[in-house]
Amino acid sequence: MSGTAALTASLEAEVRENCAALRARMAARKLTRLYDRALRPAGLKITQFTLLIAVAEGKVRSLTALADMLALERSSLVRNVKLLEDDGLLESAPSGEGRSLGLRLTKAGRKKLTQALPLWREAQMQVEASLGANWPGVKKSLHQLIAKI
Image (cartoon, rainbow, N blue to C red; front, side):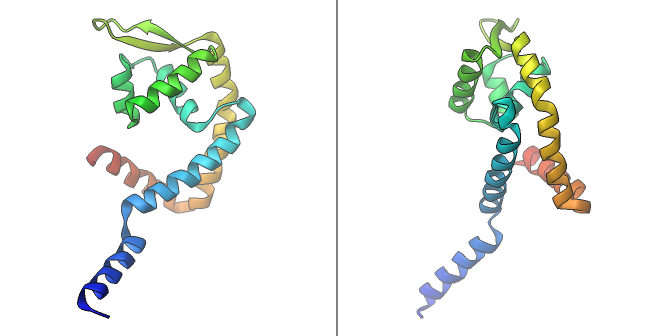
């Protein structure tokens, strides 16, 4: 094996073993599937659920701010907001900041969120149980990644 080929093989192995993006994306896909299955009886996906949670807090003043807060591409956010608006779960509301529109839960949105919360809790307990004593450290590491990258 040539020096270049050996270096390439070594770097490929390093990616497979150590790439934070690879591991995070694999974990995110598995977690997404788990939460989506759990939330299916409520007719929600985890992306929609977390959007409803963020809007329910009442602090979001614009779609751009919401996309930043959730680390979502604005186009993905807009697509999900439209689905939730079409389902009558969210509605646009003046944000109080110029021409920006904010979002708020409708009564149906509040009801759907209330229905989904225990389903989310079951999935969350499953994740925490599978991580056991490691969960607090994992959660702290995730918070650090979100804050610093």
